[in-house]
Image (tube, rainbow, N blue to C red; front, side):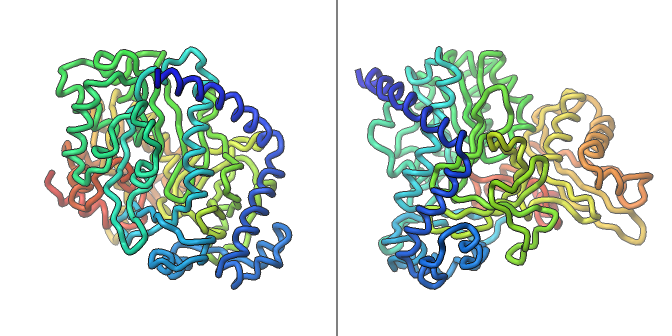
Length: 505
């Protein structure tokens, strides 16, 4: 009875929401103007808004004049005041929740304000829209007749004064209505366990007794869950355990290197995948069509977007900052957001490129600080993922994790990229794999190709095969076990790779 009621509500809401989505797709610029207007009205009631004269902001041009670009460092003093309980700092009222984000390189933690508006208008709305689009494209779906396993990186919220600090997933789980336990696994108590290995075991035990129809999480961490489930049951593939599983909602990292492994987990052309782009700072995009690999930029979530061409990116000193209507397809942009969480013209650190402007669809290309440009090659994560995936496909390999760092020039050697790769299945020939990786990267990046020409500047890639469990051990040692933590892919320094090379799993 309860599941039937939820299905009825979901069907009614689905039809209503799809109508709203068609409106913003048809009028994207009007939608963004409305988001900015609403943000400024709210911001006028804050100390930040008073300092930057929000009452004088009447359009985008005056917004740019009054409000500078920000990053976490420029807002951290205000955020600390909010954590200490001060009101009306970056957003009206007192902010109760702060999403702790440690970053992928082990840098100091960031505490992203999560307001009630951000939860409702952004994060929960994004989750509901993912469901809306999926059910729209798959009306025969039985997703809501079973449960979806959500594998997050959540830990129990830590209270500091009147503020609560933890992973975004912990905040969302803590605020979820009671009825979500009817359609999701695990229950709140298990999801908020601090010990990852204890949590994983409890989730598996609960999942094996549940009728699972969907999965949601980061591909690398979900892989650990699926591997352990196969190990405990002795089954050959995941569909032998849960035959009604039909969809994996994934995000957080590129799915490209994991495709081959998931095809073995789910050897069925009827199993679906859907990508989302969400972070502690907001929910930004989702894969709105199963026929397309790019994602629809969501414009009515209380977020106003701006974009800085990566070619001219200079952090807070960047001068070319574009609103949505001035972007072009095929260009790499650093994304700037203003949100209902009180982040004003905030450089989030992600880079994207537009694949379409009618409607606005994007692909994530990497991070402003997670790329390799040691020799002028400017390789971004998207290119590394694609080159790696093609090399794996052509040599029968399956990739589990990887990281890349520069091998700097010396008096006796040329520069190169040094790769550390943990394979789920080794390539048939590691030399051929190395050659194909290099060749594919040259095809994808003309700067890399130029530096590799005749080995003048750069030598061929150096491939290290990582022992099984190496990356897991590194994450464990750095307190990063859990569904929202990631191995850094591309770095311009050797700190991470040196630690990994010297680590015994």
